[in-house]
Length: 191
Length: 276
Image 1 (tube, rainbow over the protein chains, first blue to last red):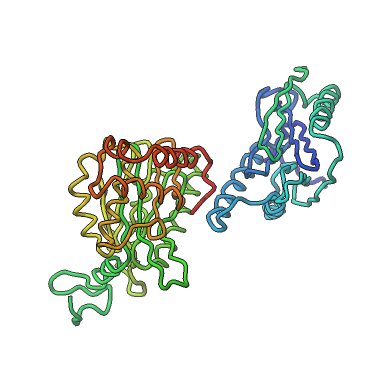
Image 2 (cartoon, rainbow over the protein chains, first blue to last red):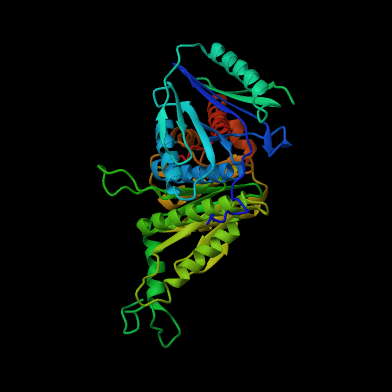
């Protein structure tokens, strides 16, 4: 009496690695740009990072169709917030919204593993990590300098690329600080 | 018009084929403080007169940002206007979500008109008591529409609604032929002149009026008070008559000229953070 299993899954895993680091007055959000399915590479140049608000960026790995849908829902919700409150959402507010949005689909989840990074209303770096159904926490702030943190991110991705077959091609790095936003790209191994 | 036996319900026709409740709703628009709109090929400007109930209160907001490419100015029952603005914003967000592109202005205006029409054909509803000047930009260019409580809508080169709007309309009728080719700044100046006409002698200052602009390369934004005051000072200095571009630029001081340009450019450069 074995249960029949589905021969079709609504989910797929497009792989990838996402990282965010919170500093005293900056935040670094990074993700590789490889999108895969099974053992194939779909593209080497896909951005997993989405700007949700001026000071909130989300990087998500998992099933990119669900990630795209999640990004759209959050962007629309942010527009509504701006109309109602006449200002942008703060990063902690966006964090709670993301959590609620994920739990809303508790019984058919977004296959998205998210990391939200930005600056809070005091200008300090903040990073929130999530599971697929919205459980989240604010991560600790590092005493590293901005340049050290960016270097650390590049080193981490080089290491991850060596051991994880789904990570590589290039890494997109977003750096947020009081002066604004900066974007860097670093090439990774293509194998 | 006077009270008669056919004006109790919106669902009652008069023998002359009129719906009095709808006409009374249009009267509400005429009682509201003035709002005007004018457009060129690339820009649309909305302007309105701010009437505060008393010196102690703030003035009512009559211009709303609906989306980056659409804004609306209202006259009449501002509460009804707020509700309709919320509807318009919601429609723009939903369209953007589905099609990842901005809602064409003409579509939004038709949806608004149909929504207004419903209220003219239900016994348990009443017509919206607000007239809307919808200013927007889409692939087919710059547009200015007027939406009535009756459910009708019209496209205009320039229009004015609300109390003493006839004075503004007369001014606009004189000037409208040159609007399509006007520059953004000239459109704003003409808007200020039209507003001044509705004030009938009252002094035009930036605390009495609000100006908003949308155009090619410029998301819908409401100009801040300093910018508006600088523009007013510029043409007050150069005299009574609405200037052509050159004479105003020559007569006004160099400083007064560069300051509004810079703040105008700054307003264009920033991403519009829903400054409603």
